[in-house]
Length: 257
Image 1 (cartoon, rainbow, N blue to C red):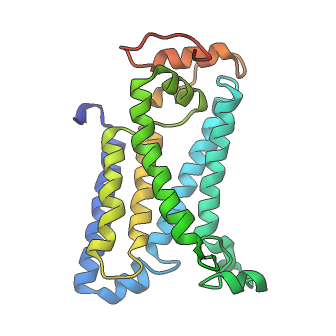
Image 2 (image 1 turned 90 degrees about the vertical axis):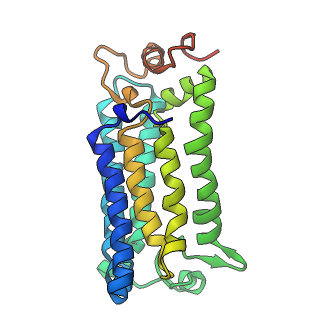
Image 3 (image 1 turned 135 degrees about the vertical axis):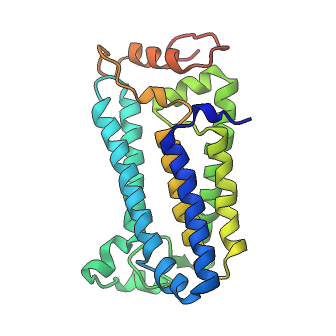
């Protein structure tokens, strides 16, 4: 089911780090629960800053790929890489409340009225019965991850056209192990920890697994520079798809027909 021989040391390190973070949380809950709440899981605590570091790395990786491959891939490939980088920058801003506590910024009146924690961020907004954290950053994000990690790779394996579009857009495809690793990471923290901040553990471990997906994707060969490629040319996309298409699928060129 899982091809361990194709797993790089860096990917193994990600999984070991996830286990270590879980073990640390469980150990602190048993021997020093106050440290778990005030240091490990707290606002501006260890895990929150670790999330910021991971998101900064992923943002830098996306921007670097866009810069490095701008003359070798299509405009869509480069544009998606930039958008993904900006999405991680947005995640950093939300984690740090856009520098509010660092720079001592006062929360504007209207935002303070609708923000549960009276902070300068979006994910803690509650307008009427709509809880942004539960709706957008909870159920919708969970649905999006399920579609991206499970459904998209399944479709890409079975339909050459889907795989061609995925590679053309520069989207990293998760392996089976990477996708399934998200299940315990998202579920177990609430089951194992009594803390109401257990979501912090799920977030940081999920961010680590994204490192595995973005660095060791099933279609990672699309991020290798291809000398002599034209700027955003269709021939470039064709060669990229030809290299990454499943061996049992006939290559039909670009755009997919």
